[in-house]
Each structure stands twice: as C-alpha cells, then as structure tokens.
Image (cartoon, rainbow, N blue to C red; front, side, top):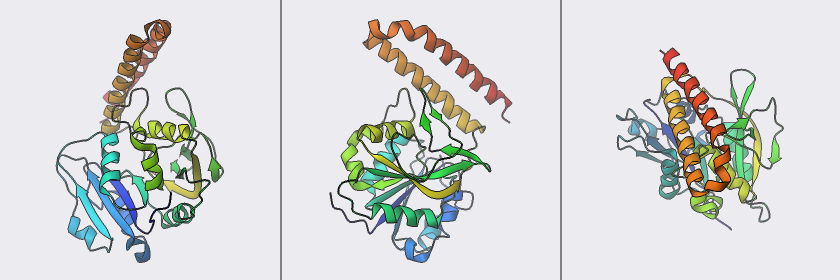
Length: 277
C-alpha cells in the first residue's frame, strides 16, 4: 500500500469568482512557502466564463497550477473523478470556493496521512466546518435523507460520520481502493458528498476529525444553492421511482409517504426561491 506522499494535490471547484472573491484561493495564497512548494493546485472552474488568472497563481510559488475550464457546469461526481485522474499528488484535498484554508489544518492532515499505518490506511481527514459562530455543520450523523447536525464533536478517530466534501482529505491509495464507488456520477437518494461518505463507511474506513475549526460561508439561501437543491430534489424522486419500478412489491407501499415528503420539500424550496432577491 506504499505510495509517494511528497506532493499534495488540492482541488478547488470555483463558480463565477476570481481569486480575490474566493475564500479558498485567497487563503491558499497565504500558506507558508515551504508548503506551497509541495502543493499542486487543480482548479475546476464550473463557470460559463472563467475569471481565474493562472499566471497570478503560478507566481505564488505552487509546485503546479492546472485550470480546467470548458464553460460547462459539470456534475461534481465527474469533477472529482477527473481530479483524481489528472492530479499527481499522493495526498488529495477537496475544497469548494467558499472555505478558508488554514495552514494548521494542512499540517495536521499531513501528520496523519504521512504516517504509514499499514493496519489503518483507510482514512479520511475532515475539519470541523462551522457556519456562523457556533453552528457545527460538518461532520454530522446520518439521517434518512441528510445529516443530523451535532452541537459538538471531539477530534479523533470516528466511524460512520457524514461530512461535506469541502475540506476532506485522503490518500490516492485509498481512493484507488474505493474505485468508482467513491464518486457517483448519478446520485439518486443522496448528494455526491453523502455517497462518498457511505462508500467510505462501507469499506470500513475511519474518519479522522481534526482540531482545525474552519469557517465556511454556506450561503444556503443563494439562488444558485436553492436551484441545486431543487435539482437534487428531482434526483431523489427519480431514484425512488426507479427503485419502485425495479422492486415493485417491496417499495410500492412506501411510495405515497415519499410522494408527500417530496411534494412538501419541493414546495418549501420553491417558496424560499421566491423570497431570494
């Protein structure tokens, strides 16, 4: 299971932002030079028109800068798979464009994942993601359709946690072991984040919750985020209907219950969208 961990690959998925507007890219520019020399930055710009200055990033002293932009808003499952295939680092970090990257977190992850523990190599590191002063958003526990949020969580080794992808880190070795199950291209009941954590749990992997407390601008009431939730709502419904068709006798009795859930949730999202400027 040995692999070269000298190079660190960091994915940042950007939506309609330049470097200064992205908390993730701005904070990456401030990490210590000794770490930047080890970092390969891979930016997936999911905007129609890119505003990222590659020359400016390259001048910051990163080992390598790669910008992937084709004007298409690709599904995150496809973005994550492409990142694994195009990057070269032994340790991989996943970030969106709204997360403040802390050097202390990077250093803590490196200490954990560079420790070549042959008996405990199925590991994913996760920071404590906070929205606002005291709202712990991730990691969380599982519910039927989303995570049940916790008031607090002790750092250390945990089993069966859910988490958002932004801030997660693991080794290429482990992602290769998970294979295509790591990042679903057609998530039905859950989003890509939850599908990844379910595949991680099914593989018997442990989540190492780090001490780092990272602020995240979750912006759950922006129009773009609400449109994404509406799209996920359709994906969940189509997944249920597909399952009912395939296993008709087993799932037909629960269909009315889910139809009620689906209708109420979609109505709530549509009302919320009307209230967003």
